[in-house]
Amino acid sequence: MSMVTLPGLRELIDGISRERNLPKLSVQAALREALVKGYERYRRTQRLDSTNNFDEEYFANFEVELDIEEEGFRVLATKTIVEAVSNPDHQIALQEVQEVADEAQLGDTVVLDVTPDQNDFGRMAAIQTKQVLAQKLRDQQRKLVQEEFQDLEGTVLQARVLRFERQSVIMSVSSGFGQPEVEAELSKRDQLPNDNYRANATFKVYLKRVSEGAHRGPQLTVSRADAGLVVYLFANEVPEIEDEIVRIVAVAREANPPSRHVGPRTKIAVDTVERDVDPVGACIGARGSRIQVVVNELRGEKIDVIRWSPDPATYIANALSPARVDEVGLVDSEERQAHVLVAEDQLSLAIGKEGQNVRLAARLTGWKIDIKDIAKYDYEAESRKIETMLEARRQARAKDVEEEEPEEWEEEDDDIEEIEAESDRPAPVLLEDTNDAPEEAAAE
Image 1 (cartoon, helix red, strand yellow):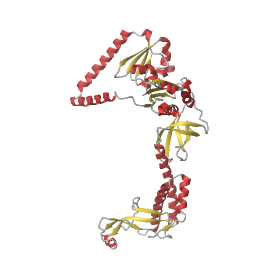
Image 2 (spheres, one colour):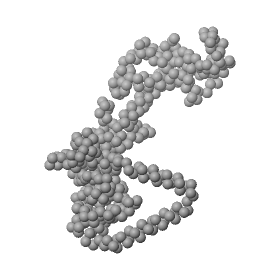
Image 3 (tube, helix red, strand yellow):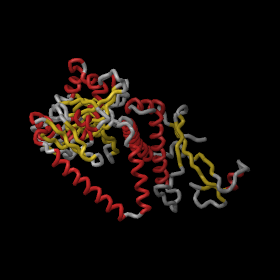
Image 4 (cartoon, one colour):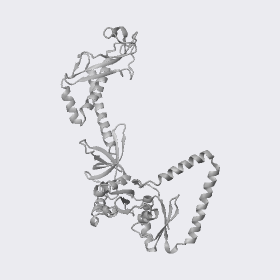
């Protein structure tokens, strides 16, 4: 078999692999693709058969075989065996094949060596190969980086500030696997108001998304405001969470409050599988040592650690911490509405500045919370209002049922039973980013 020699091929592959931090197999794959393009350019310049229309798919049956030991390459073509040849690049005559292989049949394929002579490959083909190789190597790097960071979505990385573009901060992040740093965007809504984003400053960031860019390669989006960052910091600081003795059930975070007069705040609900372990105390640590590390990383953000409870009333009361709750009334379990009664001196604390405390408690628990002053609460009047509201809902539902077909009702009934069965399962870990969520709680 003939071969086009490439002196220094082994050193070339090794050098590119080290320089671009790519596996040698990836470099070889890029080189093979580039040489196929170079051969295509060689064939086009030859114009041996002016009737051939070299479209984009014409050379799809050609491939390059690298010989690392001999430092060269061969061009191979896969051809179909036919009775009469109409295109010699894609076909070969049955009679010609049977001269060397008697068992050959029409429709079979054979691989033939079509390597050009060393001097025929040409300068233009070599230039084309070099240009395509550079592009293929960039594509390989982008693909490798994208695959690497896609596996890291939802994790926390160390990042360094590079520059500023409009209101976004461009940071460099590393996967920690020996790969070079990659640029990531920290948008305005994902920044913390108390952060000082100066050049070369380092931060822990949450990798939200890895998308494929058309020209600039993988696009990484990171966040300092995502609830996942809080979960990571607690898991990193509290051994009981890593050992699965304590679990984080839900997180509600308002890293960028709607008003500049209100600071960032997070509520986190925790639970434990061990009766003798205090999950809240484990997260806070001796004299607040553990939670203080998290607060310092988040630049002074307020964090409320509360105990999760399977009882909605207890859970809601805990979620309104630091306010003291006197009574929780579950107005409508289906619509998840609750009245919370507190003393007059606890009313502003329960609501929080500009409603932040009750808003976060509502998001944490999934209930619509209405704060009431217990001294002014009229039980009889509120009971009548609630009963009237529930009766109106029952009538509306009954009317909807009458208008539906029986078959459709049976199908929906199955769905309701399935949902009710799922509601008995343990509460999953909820990572909720609530920066742009609407207010869900009312206060009087």
